Length: 369
Length: 250
Image 1 (cartoon, rainbow over the protein chains, first blue to last red):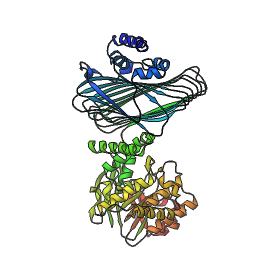
Image 2: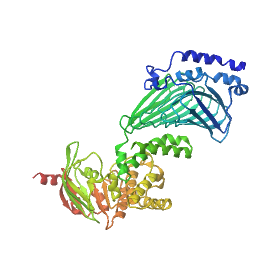
Image 3: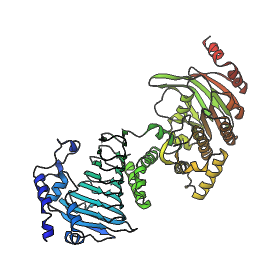
Image 4: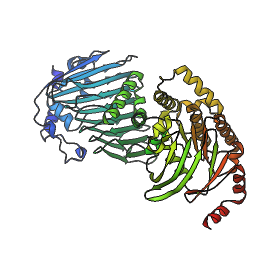
């Protein structure tokens, strides 16, 4: 237990930061996001289940590699919701990734009305390759705010394929802070899918800390009817020959709002790196909104970097073309929506999950048609 | 089959078609020629149902129905096909996936079930061969990365697959080299039959060397100002449109 006590410092620091108050919309990072609905919620619980691997408690993880756990726990993730979670003595679990072909399926389900905090530490061994699918859910028995912190430390030459599916009920909320640190030649391939929740806010923090680390990141948001889906990315190229690709899309129904903020920082030591970012939104009805904030900060010459953003209604020429071939308006819209979302969905690399995601896209178009 | 009666069309309150009259019977091929901006493409798009055009006067009868009252997809399912001058590129939708959806939409309209996958594949391969369309393009995203010639072949391929009753070809020959022109024209000729009609828009006689029309019409200033047989196209090729515009102005 003395080892556990040594972690108290990071928690106390989080408490101190947390005491400065809840996230405010006046802060630039929350410019588009209102957390008013999350105020005053009482404490609730959430269940965490992992199929395919054992979740360790902190004590067991410390037994395995105390120095690494101490180096990561509470120190990778930053930001107000991470601080709130750490200060709130969250449920803590450690998933130690070992090599395997089977996809690990992690399910986090909020229970009842209220607010729950979960802290998950992902650690990979060197050269380990593993796929993890994580579902964020609730039991739809009231407004549940799921506040999640995931800190992932990917060891040298390891690869993590992560897919996240957020399908909470339309009364619930999720704030999630995802922090990844990639060692030399580590590879992160991650896709976030937001389907449900009244508010879903993901803060994605990726640190390509050592040479030849590589990240391919993508997101798809499908908000409608007052839903707010918000994916905020901060990506640091901190070492040479690091590479990243980012593709984030919003398919926004009437009165839905989708936000993408992508800040890429290429540090002085990141010679020979490349970073390409694209975000696109399609507005499908009255009051739909897509806010894009691509940002690129380059502190060194001789790097390859680009970013782009676009937003608009469905392409009228394409709609007419499809209708001129006999597809009705709904089928044409569904096909174009599938094509738009498909670029992200195909990155899932799992045919069954891809098909179920496409079905969600079709259903959404049908609902709002 | 098609009867266009005193058709007036405007775009953003600017009159484009100013009284087009044209009758097309089954089995006929009509060519429409005319100077740039005369309204040829507008006529094709209005017939196919493209939004954004205001029909201010006149009407169109297609096989006994008021064509202009039909949604674009209903027109297509009733056998009308427009080959686009500028085929759209749609990333993420494969040629085959989209065509299967199009065929099955039409079959459903006709009270039939979906086409079996094996029959569909056999049929599309056969039709692709007719226009020498590389089979590799069938699984690619619709027109994405296609050359200009491949896009036009793809339009004619879709036409052969969908087997329309009335085909509208909007400058299908533009941007084609000589060999591609021949292939595309042969594809169109395969569709010719007593029960079908073709209305093709072109600027050049050379397409009409391959697809010999029954009638040639000159559209100028938003109206058909002269009609004739294939010899009219030869005269236009040799002398241009000046003499017709002069006649029209006097």
